[in-house]
Length: 77
Image (cartoon, rainbow, N blue to C red; front, side, top):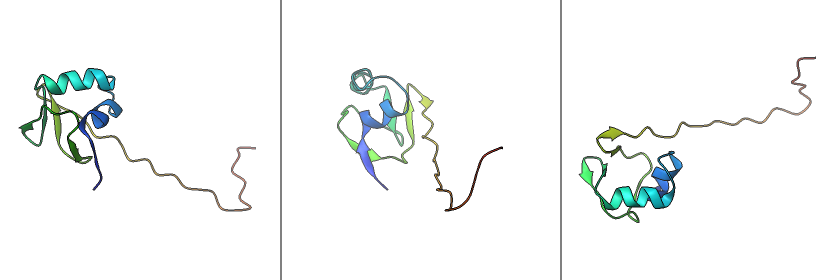
């Protein structure tokens, strides 16, 4: 479980720039696990349940990357 700043998490989830997100947090529109937060610098778990203006914010999808083994050709030709 990693802790990140609330404004960083929301901006990386596509809700706006960090400045826009900070204004939303200060207005009291953001709640984490049912608790309204007004400090954009607050560190929360990246897996926390976040809602903005009563709309749930989806977490970022996991991305798995594999390297191809040596001597393997992976083309269509």
